[in-house]
Each structure stands twice: as C-alpha cells, then as structure tokens.
Image 1 (tube, rainbow, N blue to C red):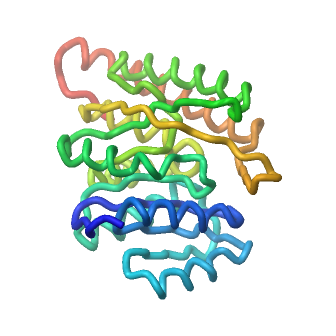
Image 2 (cartoon, helix red, strand yellow; image 1 turned 90 degrees about the vertical axis):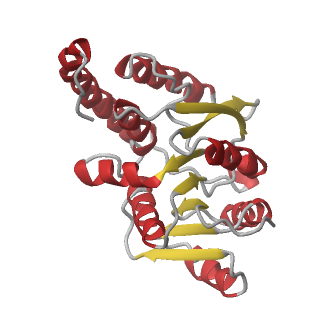
Amino acid sequence: MSAPSGTHLVLIPSYNPGPKVFETVRAAREQWTPVWVVVDGSTDGTAEALLALQAGDPGLTVLVRRSNGGKGAALLEGFTEALHRGYTHALTLDSDGQHPAECIPAFMQASLEHPQAMVLGRPLFDASAPALRVKGRRLSNWWAHLETLGAGIEDSLYGFRVYPMAPLVRLMLEHRRAMRRFDFDVEAAVRLSWGGMPALNLPAPVRYFTAEQGGVSHFRYVRDNLLLTSMHIRLFFGFLARLPRLASGRPAAR
C-alpha cells in the first residue's frame, strides 16, 4: 500500500455491485491510500460489509447514501466531502472490477505532474468487450470530438479518470439537471474542456465480466442510450451557442 496522499484519493461509486466490489476495493487499496467508496443506496448488503472493512482499515472511507441517485450524484457527494477535507483531485474507479487498479499509480503521477489537467483513460479492450458497447462508444466519441472541436478527449465514456475536483463540482452545481447518472463521464469531460481544462490521455485496459464471473451491469441499452442521446443534443446546442464567442476570441460559457 502506498503512503497516504494529502491531495489525491481514489473514489469508487457503488450501487448493488455484488462481491466484485470487495475485490475492487482490495485491489485499489494495494495501490493507493486513501480509497473512498460512496454506496449509492445499495440494497444487496454490500454497504454493511464495506462499513465492516472500513472499521479495520484507516485508509478506507465509506460514505452511504440512503437512496440511489445515480453515478454522478454519488460522485458529487464524494467530491464535495473530499474537498471539505482538503483533497484536490480524485481518481474515479468503477466498483464492478472493469477498471485496472494496477494503473492507479501511473494516473495519479500524471495528475501530480499536471495538476490543472484531467487525466483520461483510453480503453484497451480485450475479447470480453461486447461489440455493441464498443461500437456505441465510437458514436459518443465522434460527438464529443465535434462538441469540443477536437480538444483532446480520446474516449468520452471511460470512467477511469483523475479530475481536479473544485472546477468539476462548480460545473455540477451549475447544471443541476445534468451529470447525475450515466451521462456524467461524457458531459463532465466536455464541459471541463469548454472551460479550458487540458486532457491527458493514458492507455488503460478494461475487462467485462460475465454473470458467471460475478459481473454486474446496471447499464440499460434503451434507457441509457436515450439519456446519452438527449445529453449530446443538449451539448451540441451548447456547442453551437459557443461558436460566435469562439470565433471572436471571447471566453465562452461552459
């Protein structure tokens, strides 16, 4: 386990993840201190087990939300509390084991060297990746490149990232109807880019687990693709509204 960081923490949003969350937390703790988990209204008993883990590990903090609000809402609560305790940056890590805990030190080091940037994972897929999901993210990436005029977001959906928290929290509070569920990853990166934040892109493998392997997915193709579509429509009109200011060299709204 690493020496405790006073600025950077790992933040894991968790909703009914099953036993994979414990593997995820252990793997993250082997790489970094501190690690925080935000339990987003889980009903599968993992909240109680995570609280028991916290009792024996001073490097682990568990925050429990009473009701499910979505990935972005859980992260916002974690960001807000972390800023209150003096942290400045958070690496977001999904609880389902898909993200590579072994890459945490490299991403944190990049953030420490470039604290004004967001460090974005560029996913390296293996044979476990569903073809429909891979093709769908290409469309989202195309829209994100257009909306940011190719500002450097190589993957808009991969949630393995390090964010400077203060500007992100300000954005989320300004846009209270956005960035609360699966729309969080894309819109956060696009709006931070609109605000002038540079993006560093680092490769990171991603693995999808079957149900037999303990994999749990809360992504619903129809519901969440409709959410992402409406988000991109909103961002596209925001992009159009920014064009006159960009052409004139004046600062544009985020």
